Amino acid sequence: MKFFIPKEVVEGETRVAMTPASVKRLVGLGFEVNLESGLGLSSGHSDDEYVQAGASIAVDPAATSREADVVARVRKPTGENIANLRKGCLHISFLDPFSEEELIGELAGAGVSAVSLEMIPRTTLAQKMDVLSSQTNLAGYQAVILAAERFDRILPMMMTPAGTISPAKVFV
Image (cartoon, rainbow, N blue to C red; front, side, top):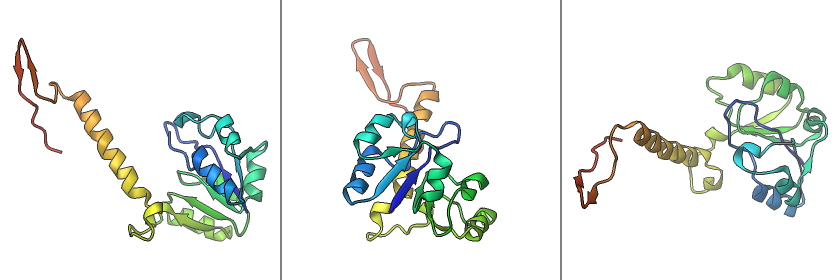
């Protein structure tokens, strides 16, 4: 079975659909993994790390996408991406199916099966695929960091020889 992991094209996107560790697991199970050059650069993973994990770098990403059995990405595919998926392919990503009826129709019309990651139930059985919990956890953490940066005082209580600064009171 052939996997293809394309590079994310949305400006500022630093997430990747697969890390080198994930690639290594899939290759160890006998899957062939191809990826677009530069896939992990924004998240700190070089092409060499992916190659060492067993992946191949696609010379022609569009052609590699057309040959893949499974295509995994973080963001929704574009019309051009869908045109490069073969009939019977499985596409895995965030899809926002309730708001993106046209996109879902395009995927269905192309004969592509799709898994919308945000629709996987949050159950013990599907816990390893629960992307919403991890993403919302990170977003909450980031929100506190950004708020602290914009706050006009320091957050913790500080006791110094020069005096004490009371802790900030915030509502999260």
